[in-house]
Image 1 (cartoon, helix red, strand yellow):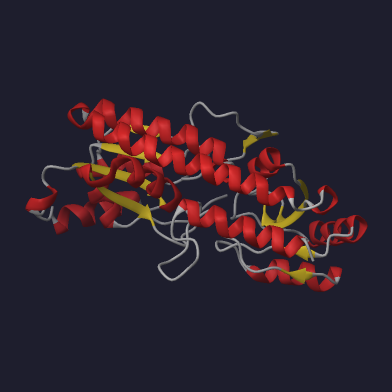
Image 2 (cartoon, helix red, strand yellow; image 1 turned 45 degrees about the vertical axis):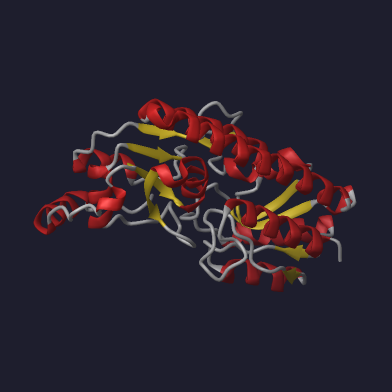
Length: 297
């Protein structure tokens, strides 16, 4: 189970601090909240300079294990619209939203997507398919136009420009992956995060260190042994670690299987300022470069 969050204490702390004054320059922009960095980057590209965006879980932050702060309470209370991924990505959000008394509409950017189901769980990692990101951009545009119709033309223009870039990214990803022989398109990663990527770009998921869509799972010795056996059986030569997961699990798997550990991928969060994955487009470009280069060896 995921850890609970003392949201009532956060609300009381926020009330004690009080609401800070809003800078004059931001008063004409609508206040928007995005739950984490990937969603925040999509929202910023559509909203541009017409929004004042607060992203709750920043770069390299694991949104599934995140513990909210009083600043998050303030952001929710002041927001006019909230963008979330949903599907279990933000297990703390419902409690925080209720406890804060926020009234802003919540927009689930994963709506209208063809989701991957496995048992009782739904894979939340929809953004690893660029075609999904294009649909998500449309959902964001529609929501911003609905809340702020006076700037509809700006949001539409931003959306069109961004979708053009996403379409170019999708074509680039497809072309680059086409250089990798089909028999080498096999992924072993820290946790089950590349389902949509595999479905879109024709990869096989050999196995994962954490046999779950969520990073708070813990593998048993039996699961690790089974993964090592699968790696040996399929001839996979490289495994991948992620920026939000403990690399020691995959290092242990690699050592036992006698394979290499590839450079870190960015999966559930964008990277920090000096990383190669500060935006969604940068993240996808870097990940695909790393995957193709590592598996081509």
